[in-house]
Length: 267
Ligand code: NDP
Image 1 (spheres, rainbow, N blue to C red):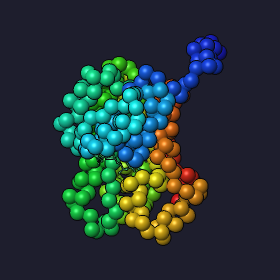
Image 2 (spheres, protein in one colour):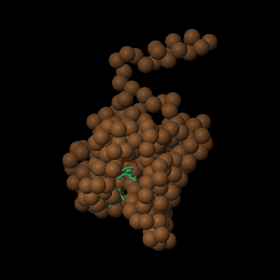
Image 3 (cartoon, rainbow, N blue to C red):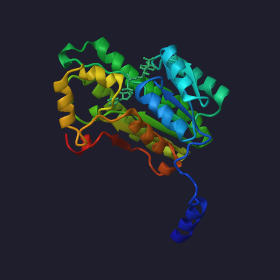
Image 4 (spheres, helix red, strand yellow):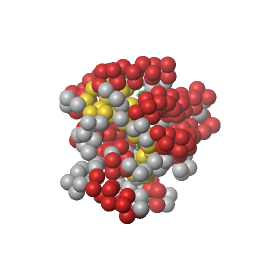
C-alpha cells in the first residue's frame, strides 16, 4: 500500500516540474510597499506569482508596484481598520481572482523601557501586529477553506522567543502570533489551508534602522548575537516566504521558520 502511494506521488511530480513555482498564484501581502513586504512581493513575482500589496500610504505603494511590474497591484488599506477587511478581500478577489497566499507582514515596533510604555502604546502595537492579523486571516481563511486550498504566512520575530529589552508590547504581539499559528494550522488543515510563520532575525529595513537608532554599540551587540555576523537582507525573508507558499512545502503547517543568520542557535 505504502509503495503504491509513493509510486503515484513520484509519477505526479515529474523531475522537470518546478515545485517552487508560484505561477498562477495570487498573494495578498500587507505592508508590501517597503522593507520586508516589498521583497516578499518581489520574490513571489520572480517565482511566477502575482501580488496585491497594501499599506496606509499611497505613494510608496504606487512606486513599489511600478517597480515590481505588471503582475503587481496595490490597495491602500490600514489593517487596523478591521471593518474594512471584508471589503478589501472581496474587492481584490472580484478584480484579480482568488487569493491563494496571504502574507501578514504589516507590523510596527517601538523601543521603550517597559515602565515607560503607556497603555495606548501597548494597545497600538498589539492591535496592529496581532488583532488585525487575526481579523484578516479569518476573512481570507474562510474563502480559502471553501476552495480547499491556501497558504497563510505570518511574519513573526525572534522577539517572540528571546527576552530583548525594551520591546515588551512587540514581543507580546509576536508571541501571540506564534501561538495563533499552531491553533489555526490545526483547525484549517482538514480544509487544505496551511498556516506557518517566519521568524526574522535582524533584517536591514527602516524598522531595524530605527530600532538600532544609529548606535554602533547596539549594532555590535546585535552582531555578536548573530553567528553569521551580518544583518539579513529583506529578500532572505522573501525566498523563505516563496518556499512556504509553494508546493515544495505542501506537508508543512504550524511551523515557525527562523531566518536569522543563526540567532536561534543560542542567544
Ligand atoms: P517597515 O517599517 O520597513 O515596513 C512596515 C510596512 O508595514 C510598511 O510598508 C508600512 O506601510 C506597513 N504598515 C505599518 N502599519 C500598517 C497598517 N496599520 N496597515 C497596513 N500597513 C501597515 O518594517 P519591516 O519591513 O522591517 O517589517 C516587516 C515585518 O517584519 C513586521 O511585521 C516586523 O515586525 C517583522 N520583522 C522585522 C524585522 C527586522 O529586522 N526588520 C525583524 C523581525 C520581524 P505604511 O506605513 O504606508 O502603512
